[in-house]
Image (cartoon, rainbow, N blue to C red; front, side, top):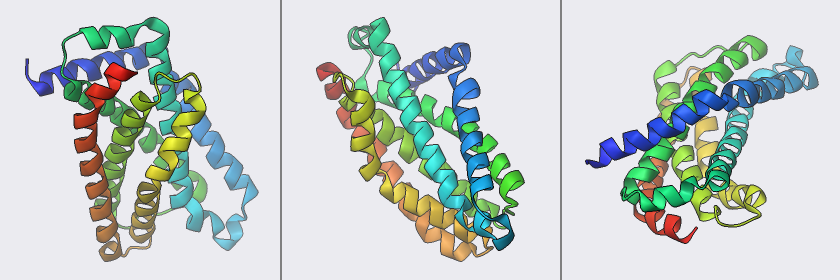
Amino acid sequence: MSLLREAALIAGKDLRIEARARVVGQQVVPFGLIVLLLFAFALDPDRGVLTRVAPGLFWVTVLLAVLLGVSRAFALEADNGARDALRMSGLDGSSIFLGKAGALAVELLAFEALLTLGVVVLFDVRLASLPPLILASAAATVGLAAAGTLYGVLAAGIRARETLVPMLLLPVVAPVLLGATRAWEASIDGVPGDAWPWVGLLVIFATLFVGIGMLAFGPLLEES
């Protein structure tokens, strides 16, 4: 079986679990919208504060959703013995990584689409330059999903993984938070030329962590 077919099997399994549990729709999406509403009330919209902080707030909320998704996915596998089944499945570690990261990326993209709508409606944000914004969002999502999956399996065998994953992941994904926020700011301001260097940074980060994850996930899974 090819690498991509194996990855598709893993991604399909994770997405079916999510479709049945509906955690993203019933917990993560309401959480994100509540965060936006709280800031909409807390900040002064008359001075344009909401528009200025919207990109950073958007990506902080996405990052919190990544932490929730990663912790839940690996805790669910530990509780049901699915991790042992993955070890004995004979599937390549690279394909397992790609499948799990791909499923997480799909969930994040759905969450980001709804969150973008909330930002536009609540913060009165106008997306002036869509191409760099879309590419930055896609690259940032891939990078966050890859890094989250890698550090999730790294902390999977530890009892305190709920607190360890944020401690490990947050410093590593700081470039994603910075690059995605700056790219969004440039896109909202209608200056796409300022966004493209940040898009390049996000693509490099995503490529790097996809490569590292494909190499390291299998050995880390065996040790978890």
